[in-house]
Length: 259
Image (cartoon, rainbow, N blue to C red; front, side):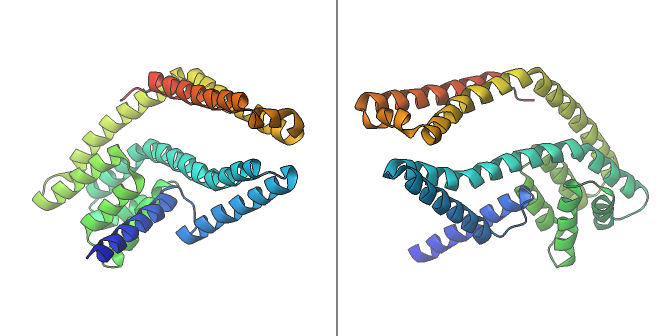
């Protein structure tokens, strides 16, 4: 029984990771992405060992090689989520107009997939493809919400499933949701504009010390290594890393506004 539960957890983890790749628009299988991570970590670790001849720089560079693709995946998912959020209003309008024109719901979803813009069109195309392969409408739309993790889209999907079950004028409901989403997106974009300078400052104060340290480590290792060999130097580096992290988290916390 424990083995079955462990296998189920591994299967869920693999599915979640596959969903993350799909949501980020990365056309790689999970094992291919992990292979790139491992290859990059080994390459940078070997480069660090050859360049510096010490274990610590090689481990740091290997860790950077492993974390780099993961950070890119996270950044890519955030960007795709933002793009989908901006395209959602237009997609709901197309869906409502298609329903008013007399199409049924699967046909209206296909119309959004055909006339929409990447990445929203791709997501709706996956919904249509899953339905054509035997999935129910609820399953296909639930998978859409799970992949995108978009609260506004989840609201629209909930309304679609309820109206599809109990009946009613779905086009009118979608138009009401579209108006609400359009207002929320407008407010969110305005907040992004107002906090752009502060977010840029948080990025600079985080990356600048790391960039300078990496440059010194590569260009002048004899200048930087005493910091790593001395207990006081290591303590100062740890304190600096903690202060950079705390400063970044505080700034991000201050500019975070829920819409």
